[in-house]
Length: 488
Image (cartoon, rainbow, N blue to C red; front, side, top):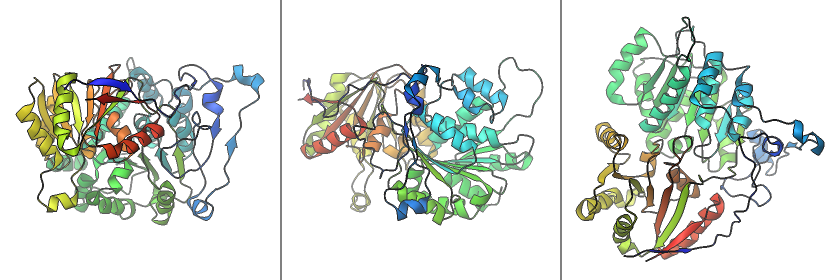
């Protein structure tokens, strides 16, 4: 099937004059509007270039739908040339140890992102926080810098805990934390290092038990399930934890397997009054209610703040977006045709999670249907790999090992299975099933082209039925990107 492109004009103007993040700029630092909206990832035309957050209390939100907000008016025009953008080191210098700051700059973290510029001063002040910012915005580095500002390596105890929904995201967080904790180049002398434990798989709990008894790590990065097992067996306690971070909190609370365990961890094993608590995610639906629940359920202290950084450019500019319309019965055929026509160097195919109704009916999951179809009919040289949430550890590890070895591959994956997996060398993303929300679309597209990993262009193609065109247009408007239609 020959595929021709016809450009579909978007209803969102792309002519936004945005300041460069790397040059000193008045508006990027000071044009802040503190406000509160119900979460939908939508933007009004007058606020596209603003960072927005609110620091009102949860109870005030419920009592007053339009709470009083504090606006930061820009200084007088004549002082514009005197204002400079602080570096990441400038923001952290009075709080984060010098050797960590040196490592941070060695790695290449110099200019703060919007979320780091807005959130770090509040975090360093000791406030419990909800970090609400897009995929790839720098949330991980933000909360790790907070952790390094609080921990004391002279004490032999677990002082910081980061909870994640998937093993892959935990590996990413652990890697960055260990890079920051490493000894900087040219530094001489002995100093006690910060030890970081990755508690991400039940199969290694015996080894972790021995480690914990010998010398407790300073920082633990854990999945909810693995940490729950360790706590239930009383291998260690959380009484000494001074910082608790829950990353991708929306995914954890949306998983029936993890929600009850997380609630127990937040309330039973440690008290919010004895720790600083940070929730982080790109999407927090009904965030007013969530903020209220944080206080009512005693997950956080009553002065918790919601830091919402609205993305100016949610999608990396190196992404090319396309869609093709077909009926349901022809989706597999269309996918095959696209792959043959595109000849991707490597790619990921996203399919929807199987519903409980479909499981009870005995239907095969979409991941199996797509994988079987590709193995039977795909004529190219790429390896067909599978990554889904219900896979056991060895199968998931084998798939990811094949991906990271390099070479060509087509990875069939569900949303939650791919969360936390960065694939910078990928050339194509295929949405076999339309993402459920604009944020899910953002997460899927965020699997590649994330700075500073890659300058490679990547094409995102979504296969939809006619009734879904309106939904995709909503995503375009909300996330401010243009989608080209492919005509069969």
